[in-house]
Image 1 (cartoon, rainbow, N blue to C red):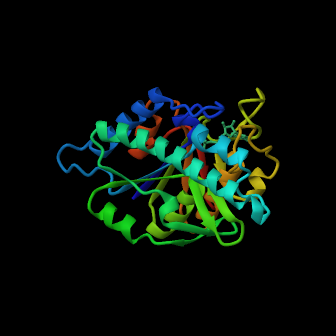
Image 2: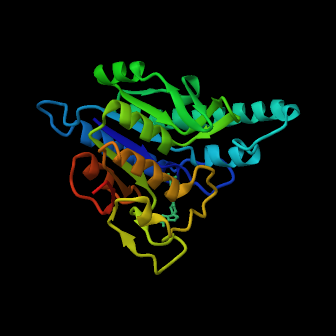
Length: 271
Ligand code: ADP
């Protein structure tokens, strides 16, 4: 079982204030997934189960920031918060629908599973998540597609959950063999490589100590950027599940990673 997370930075123009899909990346990646799933024409099951998780990018982050989702608020502001929640959920559903359209056009039997319809959180962390339906779809050969979304929280009432947190949670409970995260840089660097020419690539992260000196992402991102991602993955590594962060802007990188070939990136694992 493989979980593939495709970042909002890849599928959308992430820094755009308007929701904008990166169709070139989307269609290319759909083709790479199709190629990897069905590369073996005889047995037709090169990969034994795949779940796709995608980020919200410019569909989710700007409205989440505008409505300050996740921050404490007074009860008289609850209506406005609910409007914000509805707006974000609607936007991320639109992105998910565009992504699924491309996957289906490439012959991938995907099934959208919106997190807001079945996940709740406790202080922004998932605690109620029934995976039975997900398992049934996987067993029947479907490719479930989940995404960063808004959910009801029993402390802060309304919360954003990142695709990275969803990935971490389902990987644990589905006992995933392999995790691949496609983002717009080749993994973790000593500094943000987008803003620092002297950033040095880190091949492997084994503990929080390895990343404590990192500055956080400069993108408009309410879910923690690269540091948040690595923290989720280290949590997963504690369960014995390793993951790799790769640059999905690189043509063929996702196809190679899905097929178990070596790709330039950062491995997150415990020693
Ligand atoms: P995604 O939308 O693909 O999940 P994020 O925007 O959350 O990705 O995180 C990736 C971004 O993190 C990169 O575009 C990069 O600019 C930023 N970043 C910040 N610090 C680092 C770092 N030390 N190493 C790698 N990337 C970093």
